[in-house]
Image 1 (tube, rainbow, N blue to C red):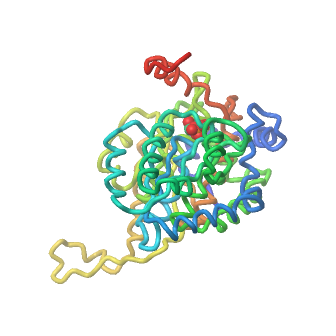
Image 2 (cartoon, rainbow, N blue to C red; image 1 turned 120 degrees about the vertical axis):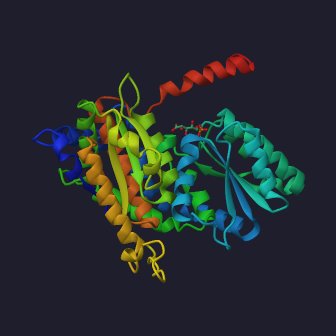
Image 3 (cartoon, protein in one colour; image 1 turned 135 degrees about the horizontal axis):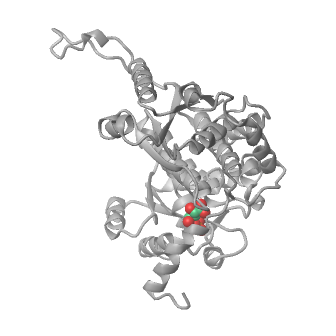
Length: 424
Ligand code: PA5
């Protein structure tokens, strides 16, 4: 289970600690569906629902793709992209020989990026999973045109068997196209917003193609949501939500999510969207930023230690390393590192973590630690459920609707007008 350690921020909080009364009230609003945006809280049921409904068909589509293709192009943006990428980079940072390569497209408008993917695909067989709840998002819709055309050139009338559409169950342009063309379809449930959708087909199909055991993910997620239903200050989601809300009221407006695992990078991107889009509204909200340690200590360390005191730090750890690498003995000790010879990298890293933590606290940066069990399907599911639940609780504590994103429309309106979209 995820554990939260607040010892590194205790001296920055009220003597009475975080406001667990408010966390409890927020949790109740969520579970009784009395809060704002309650119609978008279906993600709490996703693990169970997916096991009952789509798991088998997702696995069989993934097996089909794995059996015949060297690559999968996942076309999507925001909540229709970051969860899958976070999971795949966390759990399969190095592509395995028996798995197709997974490319992510539709997450921008760069022609060079698209051309690079097309070049990398070469003559390989490939499939496309186009993911869009609305079906109208410009970036993925344009990229999809490109990859659909490529498929049609390569496979002719059989191209339709290489397209998998993940979208609304009943409506939208993508839904209508998929139905008309006979593409295999998966559902983004009505009551689940993009940034909470990673445990639906949105995340699960690309993950399964990459060789991730999605049944294990769903089992662990189901178990985690049950465990996190605990109504007590022992609930790690309450601890995290309530501590960060209190830090915010004390002027700590920027949260740095850091991990010592480079493969966590896109999970941090997923987390940024989850928290930024859920909480940044009505003129308030913690700004979510992310860092990769120890690399970024050599670029951002100065600012963290000594810049404006508005930062707090949340460090994600995996308790059990999956592998063991020891520092080798150096004959003659030319680099003077034999004092570390024989030590596990994991142990050196743990010491570095402690050193960084105490330096940052001494420099005025409150520190929260989030411990997951291990960097595998189970640890991934634990983190997803923990961060989602804590985000909803934290959002309700701050008084916002954590499930809408009205601000995202502003740039789209301008862009469509400037691009000459009819009736924009
Ligand atoms: O969380 C969200 O709602 C957004 O990030 C969307 O997922 C993103 O804009 C993509 O939308 P759609 O899936 O409709 O293409």
